[in-house]
Length: 477
Image (cartoon, rainbow, N blue to C red; front, side, top):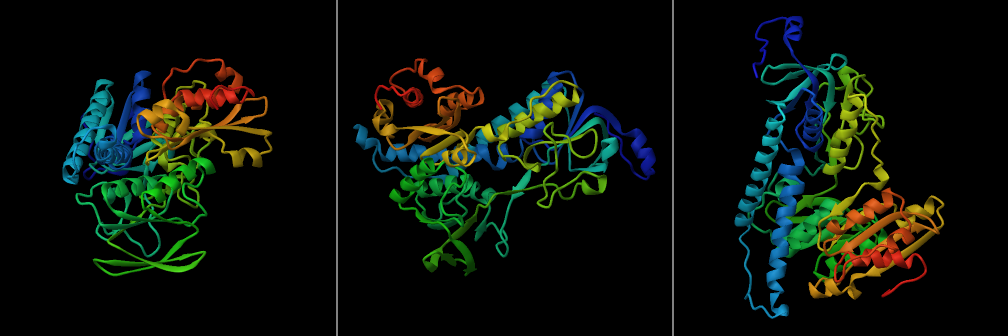
């Protein structure tokens, strides 16, 4: 692509020479590249600006590298327990640098595939950092001097790891999620601050790899937002594996250089922990700074999120925002869905807004957790006449065969009505959720699902058993 470079031209001359597109996308993460791919498949002329390689946090510093390392942990766990199956594999050893190499190979292969998809659909990719010159004109300036204009502009600038006051990331003592995913040696002792999805994944990973893990959460339990019974499956597994859990706790002080002494307050008083590294895992903040949004009239809330309506429209006509930069679940697949809504709206098509209460969630700790819809507590708070059905993997033949009997399937439903929530904790929960997600979103009843056949022996039949039990009749449970 021939790009216009401003040199010493006046701003109005630069604007006149800006290349025109149907849609300009600022950011090449899941929300941004999904918008580009979906729009291009509809015949739109798309430009996407990305300062690094395509794929964003998910592909390079989040979902994919984290799950690859968690897979390493699973392999290590499996080999260590092989003797139980009559296979003597000896004492397994871990070379984390080899796992890091494999992780990068997976990331690179997926990145090349994504870049090939964009090229194949004739999306113009512009390397560099973009900023908004004039939001109302959908005018973007790129750090390499390029000037782009679109009939529509989609902001998909993503997010950064959130730090805590006084705990700035240094990559050596105080680590963000980015730093954890590049470790080449397993730390002996680690404190993880924050027991949400990412914190629990890291606790599970590092514990399995051999670290002594202390997990601190300021709220009363780990995995806030997850159904209580499902969260307790993970907590019980962590305690069994030696992870030290401290809930209703807050870190107050960290001292030391190589060896860190961490003081934290709990309901039982002040405590100390001596660790080698501290991982701060308290969420992610939107990346809305430095791109001239507020000066362009795009409304940003007090936390830095770009304000949008249900069609992903910002306060400036023709400007949209998707992904982590908006206040919605920070999940790659939610970014995909929001991108489709934005592109359809730009095209003048009817676009069903994302129902954030019913999106699928996956947490890749061991054991895994996956859910869609309301928790039992949420359903009761909203006045539903709630019935629940809980079946445990301890009675499931396939779970016993693979040696993973811990966990449950829990269904929350309206009495004599549709399913309100499905929660799974246990083996391959993230792969088992799809049926529950569809059932919740299609407002299926227990009778609807109970009439369907689930193959035996499988993990998935536990969902069928749980649904059948809602009818007042059941087989094994």
